[in-house]
Amino acid sequence: MEEFKRNCPCCNVELTYKSKAAMTRANKVNGHCRKCGISRGKKLAKENKTKKIPIHILRLHDLYDELSGQV
Ligand SMILES: [Zn+2]
Image 1 (spheres, rainbow, N blue to C red):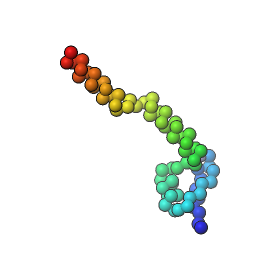
Image 2 (cartoon, helix red, strand yellow):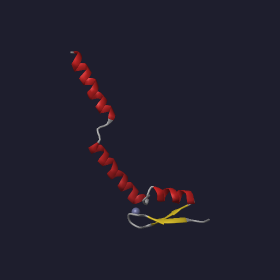
Image 3 (cartoon, helix red, strand yellow):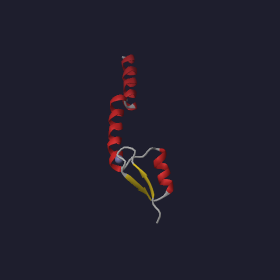
Image 4 (cartoon, protein in one colour):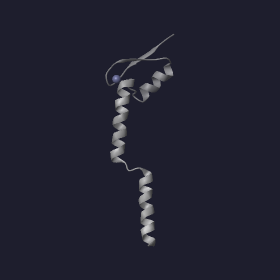
């Protein structure tokens, strides 16, 4: 069976894909190997947590404003 290969852009380890479509998709999203992908995902999640206020909290603030306006 043919294998499709590319290198991780982070640590340059060789990655093999079972289909050309999978390799093309990984190229498009600049996919990393599993190890680098996991640490990268964690970092992104942490950044989102500190920079963005979750929508449900914003809505709670709106609700409090409405309630205090009535009282
Ligand atoms: Zn890597």
